[in-house]
Image 1: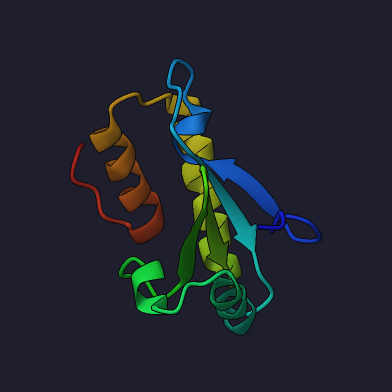
Image 2: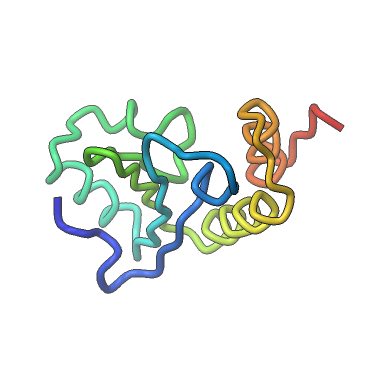
Length: 115
């Protein structure tokens, strides 16, 4: 797969930001201009069941290329929420995966279950 970051805003997120964790894969957020652009990229990369790639959230598409998970986002709101999550994760250095998931839910959806 060509590097989807070229010509687009992007950043690393997830467990790669936590010192002491050697993740099996790398999560990269990529800002697409439109939902159609993201869906076209997913389709071109062989993702025919887009609902599966959306992981229950219609605001982004997640596709995998080997050890890289691309999270394709087309709204500023979701892009900034992912930036907030990534910044908080980098600051807090949560090694516990369940805690990282809870932090992502708090940043992305406003749900807080671990405080």
